[in-house]
Image (cartoon, rainbow, N blue to C red; front, side, top):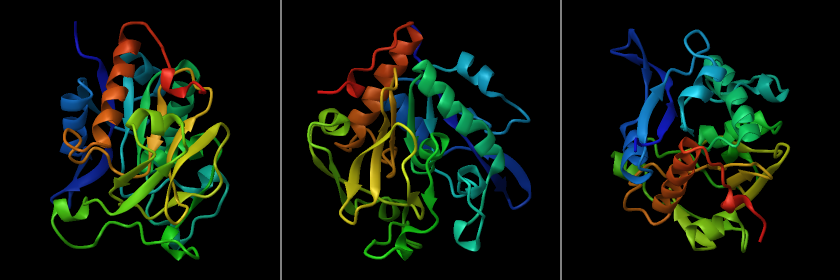
Length: 259
């Protein structure tokens, strides 16, 4: 039997400062292939080349990756400012409706960092442009210097709802994660259930309530060292199992059931 196929949302990039490219981090493909047990395929997140209906037919699940550009604030009813950073309207045009379609169909997705924020915005939520500017919040941004290992190093705790989806999935109510983001959830969207928080109250894990399939997202980067990290491995394993079920024509959602 073939592996389920996971579509990895790509980001726009420049190679050599002048060659446009659609890019995806190797660690995303590695986590999908080696931990989720699926075939990773990069999606050019641009409506000039793909549309949501096609993607839903081709893939068994979607990895909504992190990315340097942010969701455009017009998508959640706000005016852009310098604090909102750079944008990728093409990715917005693909991922936001893709999330809504997956929620309704039960098609699996896992959101990471920007993907976490996209899920909230897709469901009608809003974002803070800069977490570190809020009273009492820590700086969640990636260290500006250092090796990849230093930038993706474990930096803070995340606390899950007792008996909730992430507590049951990861086997612990308190875990340690990396952190590489500037923005974060302000108002949760419709059916967005925030299920994990950093010590400073920043939302770190969510699921879409009553979604018929795997509809989870995290603010940290579990794709880093996913095969060995005790938090990342069960997350990608469960995602792969959900994609396999979808490929086989099943749509179970045991993780999202109330206890």
